Length: 330
Image (tube, helix red, strand yellow):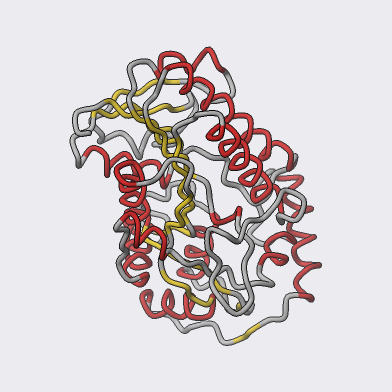
């Protein structure tokens, strides 16, 4: 597979840039698709061919997919809030559809499509796995709905012959989170001492570079039509915030808050965001999701792909270190 041309979408972003680096380490010829307005900091040091285009504009994809053997579709509109929530759904579903059609016309041999554990239902008393599928109607919030819609679309195209493997990262953390992601923003708030309290919930946290390695393993060993969770460690929010405080030399948060009294705060934050356009730190959808501990099981990827991860604490340290070095943290 080395020396073959591979196209990565979303390489200017967080997960995509990690996937691009993992591919370059294996001597693939890398082409990246970026929007004209995308920041280039994450690809500035990469030996790659840059093609500008928009996944929703079919004509702009023709030069991107030409002479490509493998495709990694990592790009996504990863926002938990937008003035127009349907914009997130449109971007993720329609962008995926247009790109997959372009890949099919170009005869791309193998595709790794980046979905998300957002398409799965959290379970009570155990970690969710690939069989715990959600649906569009019950998915909470526009981002989860958009990923369900896009994943179901890809599955329908696989049934018609699209040679795609689906990977579902949990919650990546680590370096190069330039925007940053919602989880990255939470790490920054906690590292800056602005999160004195927490709610009783949990996340599955994984180093972004381990997720990238999982993508490459899916290309090499994944079965067409199968889905693989690329997760790390299940961690309560209290544990995560305590670790951040320890790394940063701060006191850990002391107060556990019930969710219900926070809804008015979320509504006010969303009202302010509707004026400023800046994504709020707390939303009603986030509180709905916090009702369940979002714990996931990567056993299938470990067994079939040889997927492995480093301790989550190392990922947290790398994330905070990068935020400091990049000037996000003083």
